[in-house]
Image (tube, rainbow, N blue to C red; front, side, top):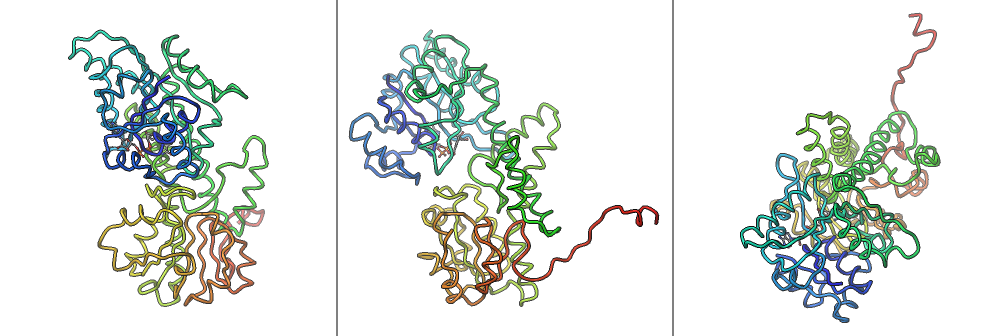
Length: 464
Ligand code: NAD
């Protein structure tokens, strides 16, 4: 079966490579010529563990090819999969311009019955909209060709995208014709040999499922981040509370880490889009509003902690802060909405110099940071280089190589001894033992005294 993947980004390239790995003949198409030139030259434009090898193997076997030309690519495909970007517009609503262009191009080149599969994250109603756009292009050609539109949202996670795609928890298919359902079942058959995880449903439910899943996961993170502030004020430890609640089978452990806030290309934009949908339908948005605002606040927690720490130490102006980890999460070079961007902006605005290091996201970070900040930034070779003469270290992304830092050695090269851990990777008392002023998320600092007042009712206060 010939497949066409339209949009060769994080989702499209992984999807194309994994289908090719299963034996399908796949063409990946993108309007970005530079990206396609790189791929045709054997260069992978993104970092995703394991992807390079699969792309190389399948291009060599001629199962995977890259193009910018719609006509031939659409003509030979039986299934066209949309994996284009669906960013958030200024109003917060999903921006479907890439979807519209791709659907128009399909309509212009359709030559027989095909299934158009939407893998991009989109609002309910998009499949019907795609059908309308393709039909309009066909009408212009006075063509009566038949086609089906299917919703097949993607749940892969950057950093583990290959494994997620090859062994999905579930594959959701929203289809309205039996023919489309059967073809989609055949498409995913090789992925379902050991266990059937294919769920067929109506298109609206499939489209909404993706937003619902992301909102639920973001909700867990924001809840833990909110709780982490309560922990700090009350002398509790969020990592202990996590164990206490995660061990309840009804709750479970995943996505219960407090940290520096969530970023990436999905959660922030999908929450905005979900809010925009609910708002347009005059539904209560307070839950989604809270998830979003807690996260925005959490992204400022590290810079606030750094500001507080240096308040009695001569202020932040002129201080040097080493930042370890820039990508929005480990094992990706994706900088979209990364918490590090907020921290860097706040520190530079306060007059700091920042020394930046990330194992793979340095090039993307360089593209994303404004020219005006250049004089305040030093790009570093490694953790040790970043720590040189730094007043403090801020660990923002929990790359595995930051789990066993030689903190004693880092302290020797630093000017100060503060370590701000945005991902709770270290033990506060062990860090204190080696002379570190260690400040993390949702746990008491390794130094100083907790000062707070409890508010509760006792017989004494009730009587008063
Ligand atoms: P991306 O920005 O990395 O890639 C999108 C690609 O589509 C770009 O290369 C762009 O040039 C191309 N494109 C745009 N218009 C086109 C057109 N008319 N024809 C051909 N190509 C076109 O985006 P992504 O991160 O891969 O996300 C794609 C979709 O998948 C989004 O809707 C996203 O929400 C969803 N999604 C993303 C992830 C993730 O982890 N990145 C996971 C699940 C779902």
